[in-house]
Image (spheres, rainbow, N blue to C red):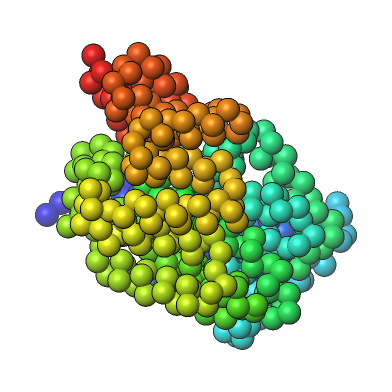
Amino acid sequence: MSERSPEQMRDQIRELLDSLYRVDSGRILATLIRLLGDFDLAEEAMHEAFAAALSLWPTSGVPGNPRPWLISTARFKAIDTLRRRARFDASQDQLVHYIEAQGNSAEKSNEEDFLEDDRLRLIFTCCHPSLAPEARVALTLREVCGLTTEEIAKAFLTTPRTLAQRIVRAKAKIREERIPYEVPTAQELPERLGAVLQVVYLVFNEGYSAAAGAEVTRAELTGEAIRLGRLLMELHPEPEVMSAEVTGLLALMLLQESRRAARTSPTGELILLENQDRALWNKEQIVEGVALLEMALKSRRFGSYSLQAAIAAVHAEAESVATTDWRQIVALYNQLVRIQPSPVVQLNRAVAIAMCDGPEAGLTHIDAVLEHGDLANYYLAHSARADMYRRLGRTAEARASYEKALALTQQEPERQFLQERIRQLG
């Protein structure tokens, strides 16, 4: 057996580091922000640590536990950076002593806070009430969860420029007001939890249906969102309605994630719900999700996440699309629209109405949603409209709506699906 060449070793290390960055960079960055107290310094130091690993590991070997190595290396890189700056700014020397003390303290203790997770702690910091609500979510998705500005903009149905401005303003406010990197107290927790739930929900959505790229799903994001949901379950916050919504959100994520294996073909093509092989659905996740949903509903103080989980449960427990209780789904959407009258919820309700009362009724409701203009650039609205036209035999209008949807999506499997729909129209 021939030994690997230096180039092969370097390529292997690069693949390992790519994987580490994809899976662990969020947690590494969160710990560095705690240790360094600065977003930009932490991000710069983390990238320097990964570059150092690429340089050193091919000859020194991969450490037994790479993540602590990267964190420690990044911390020393940050200290070096601050010492260089201290030649021109004496205040930087104080930061060096602070960071060294933080590192020594971290090595000697196990962090006795009631929330033992740097990433979740960082989310709470980014969701501080002094920040604007839209900035809290945008900052967390960008800095904690690693989503790009373009991906977040699609989740918010806004422009990347607008999102970038929100993030810059939020980071400036954290720096200027010296917002601490800490877990909120039990009294502060309810005020902060709503924004955190929204963050976890949007992270899951991006993983469940990626905004762009060659794959429909991003399992690392859905997995991270579910992990954070489980950590939130351990907080047992007050008031009870928030506790019910934490349970409802985790139930929703598990029920949606249970379908992941059936949502694409072996070659990556998108498979709609009506054509999915339900034998591939994850039964364990369905059972756990339904049990959590029942806990949330028993509280009688549930909200939008629990209602969405109830809709997902109706789908999960049906043997096929034909046997799905669409009347119950419409009734649940009616409740959801009352407490969360967003355009996307109204669009989903319109599709459910079409399954109950036919495509003409669905088209009427979809047109009403589109007339408000909020979903003018949302490809799923035009795709749903095209499907109604297709089912009604109105081929020219179906083609126009499919082409509009095609122009608005950046996810390759969805583009292929829409192109195939257009081709089938002749």
